Image (cartoon, rainbow, N blue to C red):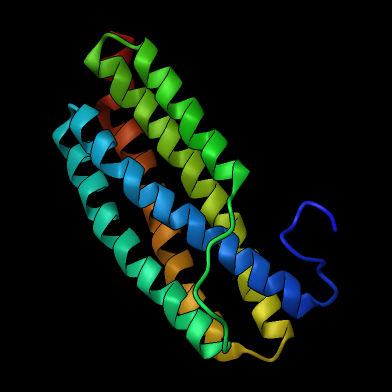
Length: 168
C-alpha cells in the first residue's frame, strides 16, 4: 500500500481515487470561502467569492452525481494539496494588515485553488473518456468550465483595479 487508502491497480481505481480527492477539495473550499468573503473589501471580489461559493455547492452535487453514475459510494479522501493551499492562504492573509493588499493576496490564494481544481478536473475528464465514461466526463466538464471562468474573472478583478490599489 502506498500513499492511497488502498492499492490502485487500474485506471478505474485511479479515477475513483481522484474523484474522492476532488470531492474532499471542493468541500474544503466550500468551508473556506465564507471567510474569504468576510475578509475581502473590494465589492466585486466579495461578489465573485459569493458567486463561486454557490457554484462550489453545485459542483459538489455534480461530483455526487458522478459517483452515482460510476456506481461508487460518495466518499472523500484527504487531499494534502488543497489543505496546504488553504493553510498557506490563511497564513498569508493573517499577515496582511492593509485591506487593499489583502484583496490582492486573496485573489492570489483563490487562483492557486482554481489552478489546482483545473488540473484535477482536466485529468478526471481525460480518464473518464479513456474509461468509456463520456457521461461522467460531460458532468465533470461543467465543473471545469466554471473553474476556468472563475480563474478568468479573478484575473479581471486583479488587473481591473485590485492590484493597482494594492500598489498605492
